[in-house]
Image 1 (spheres, rainbow, N blue to C red):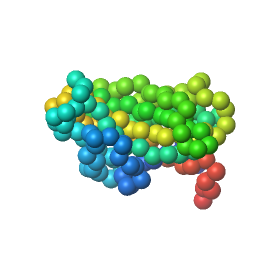
Image 2 (cartoon, one colour):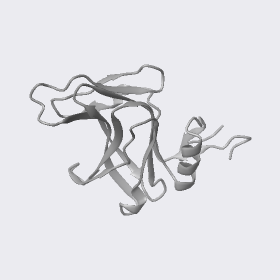
Image 3 (cartoon, one colour):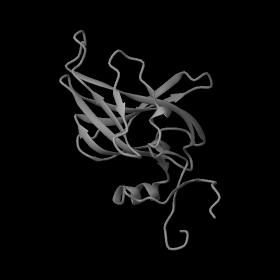
Image 4 (cartoon, rainbow, N blue to C red):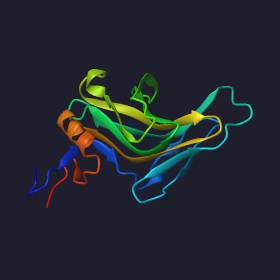
Length: 177
């Protein structure tokens, strides 16, 4: 707590203020990205390419990060709009940035929180991860809008699930004035 306000401390977060920090997935079917409002990232897919070999389509954006999963084991993403589905894919990377394991959060088909407890799945300590925000759905088109992504402790994960609009979020170790 700080003053009259609870502060949620995070090990890593993106409040979606700059979509330029996310790169397109290395695949033919690239998601269209936009920032419809400050603090959101929209991912959209039009009709799948003619040679798309699947009965549904998916794509997304990605970025690499480091996080202390012992202190901040819960990875959460708030999705405020979805037509199709949305979830997180997480590659666990080795020292050469090669994926040695891939994990997935729960899948949303309606607005909500997609999350995964990495503390149950990874050894404690610093983890080098490749995070992917995924959108998928029918080959005719699909979309999702992400509001934020955060690594938090379990108590704050429960709190943010109940109050996803909570705005007092700070990086762990950040000085408060």
